[in-house]
Image (cartoon, rainbow over all chains, first blue to last red; front, side, top):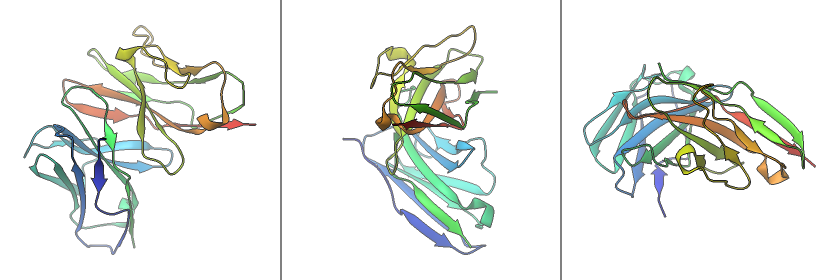
Length: 112
Length: 109
């Protein structure tokens, strides 16, 4: 059973804090993705990675960075959290070609 | 640019009625298209993909390259189909998986 695990279910952070969201998968998937999910806007791709130490910008990368030092772990970093980054964050992984993506349970981040 | 459009935010039907959730895409290459579903308090999960041409939980979707559409259909909706449905496009050239805005399906008894 594929597992994609996000380190926190809920987070509350203050404006200006540096925030780390962690995601780990156990299926040796090459691709990993970070999305934010907002009502009416669906899932918007922030960053993705197709290999260790490789990263590509998605559609809304501003204010975020990522790190992939190991194949199984993909971290999303909010350099200086702002209130407009309050959202549900979803991590996903898949094999290299367009096969099924498996999702984590999500992290609901509130920036106050 | 790659884009996925789901024009309906909400689709409300009665049990037993047919359902069609619309999805249009924009992609210059050969698309790989998916439907994902998120039931209340559950993770997003794959419902079906166009290459497998299968029916899952009574749902089917046909890729129409001429109309750049991948609509999801079910002849008789059930209450347990109530969920959020997302159409997704994998653009192999860029290794990106992008989603539409989603359609909430509400099936009433």
